[in-house]
Length: 170
Image 1 (cartoon, rainbow, N blue to C red):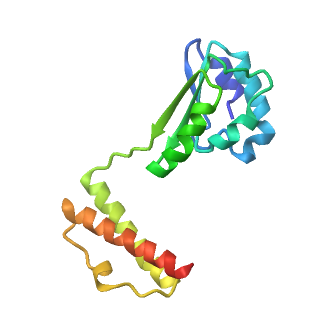
Image 2: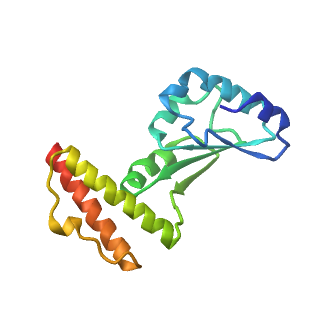
């Protein structure tokens, strides 16, 4: 939630990103959301940026005096893949906000970071197979050269293996 300190210290025109480590429209936020709306209402000179992956909950969570939106509230949904974009964007477009947008999740990694990440995914795949008593195939265990294309080939193989493990466990 927005702290009273942030509210007092915020300068006119400043942007406050609300619940950046959570989601303003989580069910768990229902008990305090009205208080947050009251704070946002008190500071029309400050911009409040809301981000959610739950646009289907938004209409029921808007304040009584929302109308077609408040000038100081920017609303965005995250779309981590095409399926989520197909689900969330139509809902976003129907919501009464004066300012709305779409945030594509994008993470930039160095080659070294990507290699570490793929290595961890490999370790997780091995553990997942063991925990679900699924034998991995030879091509799922082989690792290509971890340079350039090899990293992506490994990632594809590990994700395919995980999909197969989840299917076998279901």
